[in-house]
Amino acid sequence: MTETKRLATYCGIAAPLVTLGAILLATLVAPPETFSWRARALSDMGRYGAPTFPLFNGGLIVGGLIGFPFAWRLWTASRNRLERAGIVLLAVTVLGQIGVGIFFLEHTAIYLDRSFHAVAALSVFGVAPFAGWVYGAGAALAGDRRLAVPSILIGLVHPLAWAVWIGSLDGGADTDTWFAVPEFIAAVAFGGWVLLLAVTIASRNDDPGWSAR
Image (tube, rainbow, N blue to C red):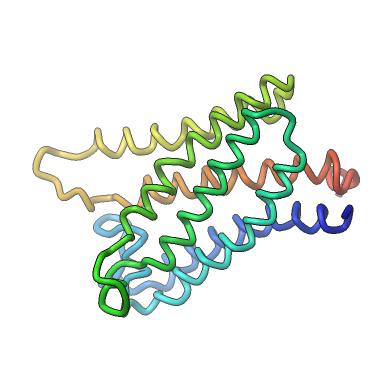
């Protein structure tokens, strides 16, 4: 069981690296007509028929699948109900990430008559900050400032990014203008939080020598 927990913790390190790495690489190789920071959403890179279709969607799906074992590891290390509630929200966010990859833009051209892309995306961007706040509250209740403070603060990054984006729009501006920027900031915030949790669990429980490396 000890080795299983250690591997699950390392999944928490690998998952955000795979996900964010795929997203960033896709932004670098996507042709201008399919993606630009100024005029497109990140999901446009996963649109059916886009050159970055397999890279973007594959990264979201694989990264999400890798993240599930870490959610289990967090659950086994949880100390109260609030932390466990935060972990459930984290798992919902990861499931939404996988959903974005499965229900990519224009997936109705291949399967299903109804698009579920917006629902999947909302379960990522809408739930992720609450995961941080609830888990952070649980960590505070357990007297763990090292996880409580950054969890709550990182959770605040999400609404702040969206608020700044909304404030930057002119009355007649297209809502796709710079839309990818708050999306990416939110993705980095969530991935960074998961990475922080994983490194903390590794250094405390599964691999005490981690911090010395």
